[in-house]
Length: 346
Image 1: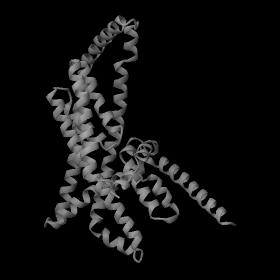
Image 2: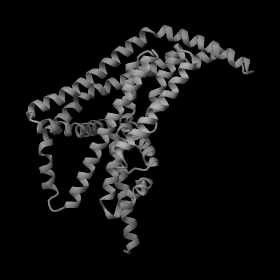
Image 3: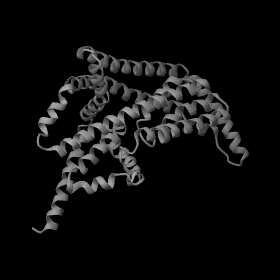
Image 4: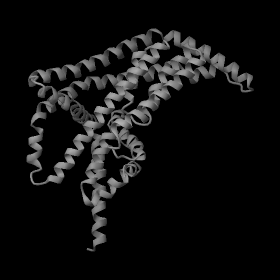
């Protein structure tokens, strides 16, 4: 067999393996999501856990403090969702009336422009009951996620319990293979750096959005701020999705100038934090091409569902580091990299 034939066989073998792995991940998505979330949440909390221990906090107490933090976050999320769903159901007749008034108003405006639109047809196409059904399904899916959050918490607890001994295990596993140990250390450091900075900037985004909506007296300001915090983890489209509910409510209850101000401020907040502040703190350490980030959202969202979009960047970074560590796949790592960032450094 010639060298070219061996190379072709090599690529076909790995392509076939990739198809099998992706199919397996998609079939076992529910279990894989719990595993990935446990690993990545633990990667965020491990520096905090070890930091508490270094400052003299006994390990069992540090462990309890971290778990209390996680459970408190879940309780906060569940409380916000429960109160918001209850409030939305209570105000449903008001929203329906506002929707009718809006349909009549826009029908008159379009009629003045020579465009004839039947208000009843508009109301049928914008039936609020459809949105309620969709919201119910989304809340049901989120409820399923929250019910599985107990498994994630248990997984995080076990990983944190093993964290103090993890370095010693790695040295034994990679004994005599310094390059592999460096690659794994790079992966671990990059993931921790990404999630730590992303969590802080997302928290800042959610806080600023909440304060802005409270200033304009938009309903469920805390919920939309919390949504901004969560969706900020999704690159490219997350910030756009987070702005939609608050702007729709403003269309119902506020004048057009308020709506314009909200749109401008949403764009300004997300651009300043995501495109100015975050890159300055994070630098070019991720090294991923913007096109790769965008298509990774589509791919991991298809494989793992909505949670896959949250984990798209760290999972893709893992693949890039794995490709970079092997001479035969290094070209794939180069294709995934952001060479413009490297050029600036050089």
